[in-house]
Image (cartoon, rainbow, N blue to C red; front, side, top):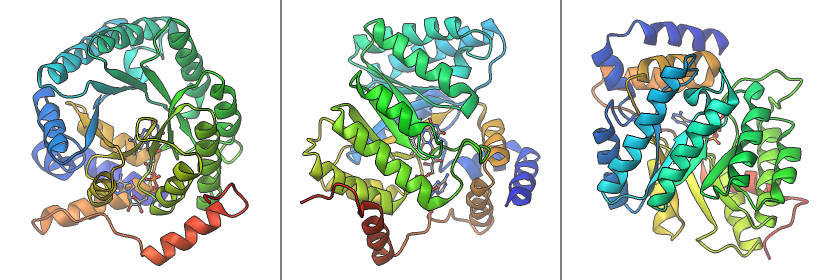
Length: 330
Ligand code: FDA
């Protein structure tokens, strides 16, 4: 898989931009803010919410971080103008965290203040494990500045996720729970799929118990079923949680949850750095390569393939295993 990932990353890097755009168009809204707004409007017509992300990370100059912050402010304005819910996802390293966390905090606070005007929301994305302590501290500082329209992400893959969610619980947090996209060493992260799922359910349970807002970010049907049970067990109303999925991944599941009355938000990335972003993702997580290879096959055969569906019975069995020993819905 590692070899496949690195081969796919190289192949993607030398792919001519028009073909690369075609390959990624299912997962990336486009290059401009207008394209992102158009996608968010289309989602709205299907009963789905959006969170908009500007592609790019690892900014290493103060000027670059300011440019990024400015683009986010423009994005907030464009969403407001289109009468869409103002909701963005921001990576700390796009706002200069690699240079100086204080600089990053000022930019993040300015974006959150601007979002607040339109009752908007800012989710601070979580990057690789070395950024976790700084990002959690950033989240706490933003909250202590009175910015309660910000959220943070917990990655269930990490051993530390359990402690982090318990610590966060006291501030009644807004947390997106995901598995974590970054490949991390075995000394700090679970590699086993079931272990990650169990940690995910523990984190979600702790969050639901804390009265914080739960953003359930997954396309894993077993986790979706487990989350649905947990929401009933914790007597959660639709104003206190949402499901989240990535653009182009399991649209069928997103629409099905939405039509059953659950809030569903789709992560809508856009920007000029799509090719760099995708090839970085490929190097970081070889499993992503399989999706890109499928996209290549689809592009050359004229259509992009749908993400595979899991068998329902298998999904339910999985959910039962996850719920075993836990606090089951009655
Ligand atoms: P899993 O990887 O098992 O996927 C389940 C199924 O979904 C797969 O079998 C496949 O069919 C499909 N699938 C998943 N990913 C796909 C893809 N890219 N293309 C096509 N099909 C795909 N991570 C992080 O480290 N920091 C963050 O801030 C965020 N933010 C974030 C926001 C949102 C809204 C989502 C949905 C995800 C993230 N992630 C993230 C990514 C997350 O950590 C995780 O890597 C992916 O969601 C995949 O994990 P699943 O739980 O979907 O399970």
